[in-house]
Amino acid sequence: MKETKEENGRITEYMGKRVYDFMRWRKLAAVLSVVLVALSIGALAMNGLKLGLDFTGGTQIEVGYQNAPKLEDVRNQLDAAGFKGASVVRFGSDNELLIKLPPEVTESMTQRSARDEEASQSIGDNVVGELRKGTDGRIDLRRVEMVGPQVGEELRDDGGLGMLFALAVVMAYVALRFQYKFSVGAVVALIHDVIIVLGFFALFKLDFDLTVLAAVLAVIGYSINDTIVVYDRVRENFRRVRKADTEEIMNISISQTLGRTFMTSFTTLLVLWALQFFGGELIHNFSLALIVGVVVGTYSSVYVAINALMALKVSKEDLMPPVKEGAELDEMP
Image (cartoon, rainbow, N blue to C red; front, side, top):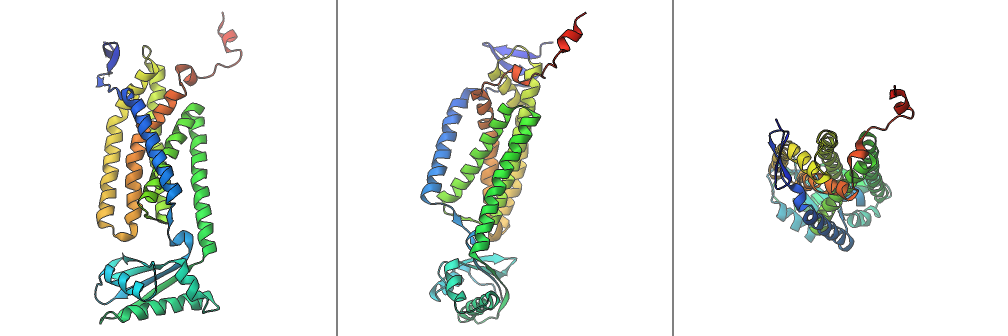
């Protein structure tokens, strides 16, 4: 029984499974990736990331309402009271609000007090005092936290270093498990995914805080997992399928992992969509970053990572185990 079935000189079936010609569109996919990365870099250069309070510094104030307020009314009330640029989201329940004040407001009010603790309490009292003027119900001050600009800068630098360290570890792992050409392809795919996610947030001017940074790091883990699965099949098929060129090996490998890739991505997206629509505003950007990352990561595992291998001209010889010195002499009679 033949392992492969061919039509017009191309493998269309292997081991009883349909083989799709993914590599037929690899040049078009490469152009699409270049365009997306260029747009993302352009958005980052023009708009930059809208860093959240975690990175810029500022004040977080948690308040509790007796009756659930309208967010837009609270924002307008704070804006009219001089708290420009305040962010207001629901926190836990409809009656709980989390108010984030930008560093400019925090610094101007901190100058009135000698101690940070006194300053943060003063800011919280002022905010609650203004909010009480616009409602008949009771408003309680639950918590006040101040993040200094130095702490925010340290978090930003540590987050960037963490991302670079993750990419370096991934490159080393793939190089040891497979071969250096595979590690280059994996890291190119990861950089592609990270840049597009960051560019998406820069383009739409969405808040980028620690939760979004955590989502970006999760995207790196998700994408490399998918890429490793495809790479395993590529290595296996290079050693098993004899009468096939590199392009056909790639098509066979992607086709074999297609079902697993689709089901993993689909079920992951179901959870993320649930978080997006029902998880509340606090994790809205976190789930959004993961949704973009999963979609782009699935695409990059098929086309960017494999395209990189094609560009580096990976071959069967690259994956053959090295022959030990003197081994050939030992096998001679």
